[in-house]
Length: 116
Figure 1 (cartoon, rainbow, N blue to C red):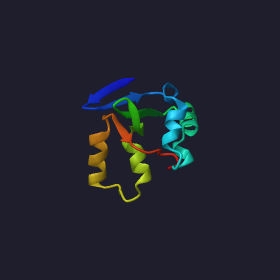
Figure 2 (tube, rainbow, N blue to C red):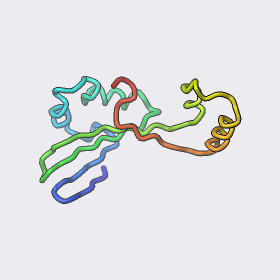
Figure 3 (tube, one colour):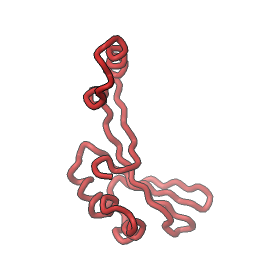
Figure 4 (cartoon, one colour):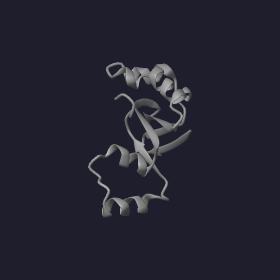
């Protein structure tokens, strides 16, 4: 767990949802989608090993006031090229491929890429 303090706010970041109380998490999502529920996120975390999850709880004066769920995804250019049909095999395409060929990037996603 990583903890940040800014004035009366505290932000705690966890790498596993099991480190957060299930009732606390679900109390914030009662009006939201099942896909943001503790149970569903626990399943995603345990089955989708290529995605690195982060869970953020936000407190104001020791009272939980917010949540956030992030996914860190290993970003590879060849995957982008497969999904983007507008990129043609031309000079620019080769330059982009050459530039990113040896780069390692992680994509930070603030929603669930699987279902939401």
